Image (cartoon, rainbow, N blue to C red; front, side):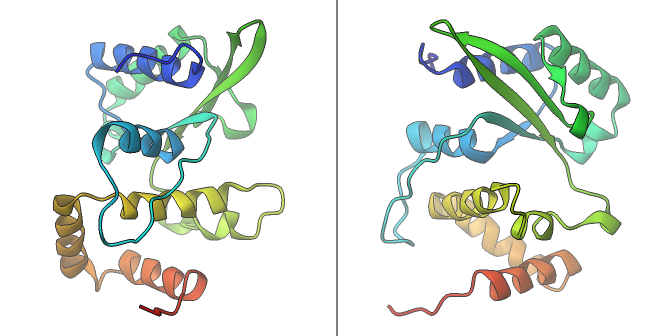
Length: 192
């Protein structure tokens, strides 16, 4: 992929990935940028949903950290060093999880942000409820849309893997909770 000269977020992603690869630090890209790249380069709409989904704009890079990475102190230290070398600064309200920097785009300043995402501690597991009715943030709606768009664009193998995962884990608390959220907050009547 060559960066679009007009898109500082793609340029920043490429710089970040180059540095992370050099340090052998695996991450999973999520959020709006992940959906954009998937739509542009990987997959077409699947027949499970009759319409294509629009790509939403985004101003950040959502990076999911695996449990193995989080448990590897030297790798986490390397990740911090990479973020620092690329001139990102800690966002004080979200210390150690959000970073930003100003980039120049044709003489105008734009902010690029990195969000490091990991599963919350069990006692604080309110990843949906904390944003659902937040008048100050629109993130809950965006995250729900990202999940929807991801499912719509799943390839057949991803779909089969998800079905196997559901069958194997449907009795577990996190899966029951997810099913309850879907039923309560995303219920829709099928008319097909």
